[in-house]
Amino acid sequence: MVDLDFITDAPEVGEIVQANMPRLNDYISDIARQQYEVCMDKGFKLPKYYIWILYYKSKKSGELVFRIPICRSTRPSPYQDEDMILWSVTNYDKIKCEYSIPKKQTIKYILANPDMFEKSHVEMLRKYVQDKLETLDDYLVGDKIA
Image 1: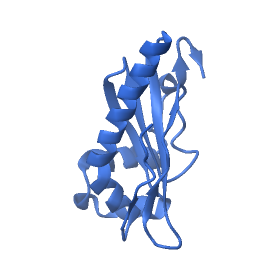
Image 2 (image 1 turned 90 degrees about the vertical axis):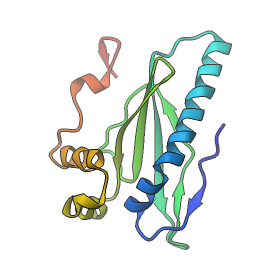
Image 3 (image 1 turned 30 degrees about the vertical axis):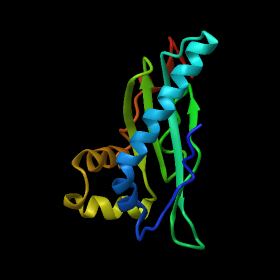
């Protein structure tokens, strides 16, 4: 499995997550490839699943630490925790970043300085603070709510 317990020197978590997104996307692609291999080897189908990564700023060193990714078939709510990123993987190869939620103070900073950040991330955070980031369809597995 891919080791995501890497550490990055960082003054602000939100800025570092944005700077490390290409590296994270490479890890997520590798995880999706490994999941595909497991599914093919075991003979089961997984039409959609999620890769969820939690991160935090170390109180000791001030560095950003990414935890080992969690693969799951149900979608975690962006409102259940802070400092997390969620990707969805559909048909083993369509990878989409669903959300990236920093701490509330970082969200305020990003929304107060939108020109300093990616437009799509700012738009996602605006939906998040308006409680419009999720729909009921996000929680359907087949025809049932999971």
